[in-house]
Image (cartoon, rainbow, N blue to C red; front, side, top):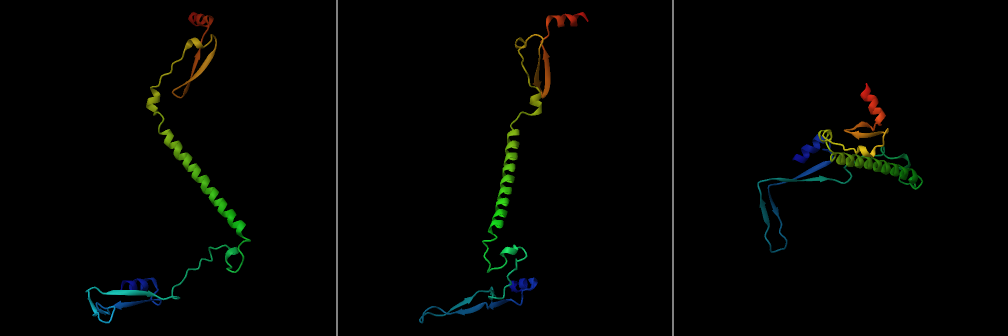
Length: 162
């Protein structure tokens, strides 16, 4: 009975028929000497029959390309344009997938880098002997430039005189 109610709610009652099977039915046994089997179940069953030709097939012609709507036409003429669409779609998905994979790998690798509090405690060691007199060298420390100048003896005397 549920199938009839469901069909009626959808508006398909004219196309769907149900056959109710009584609760006690005599089922003939195979063979002449065999006795008939009586089913005495208290639960009724039903069979839903949808007859051929009564089911509406949806029309997807609105979504089809005009070059492929005619079933008698040779579709080889429009195969190039349809293939081009498929290639563009596949290429777009490939580029999108590659960009997503790159982003995922970058985020994963950046999670391995040191945090800001660890970088703040970082030390830098510079050998002043390798810097020639009178030259400037720039180093990066805590993300900022560090300028070091190896002053000459004259520059040191000028600063002490001030």
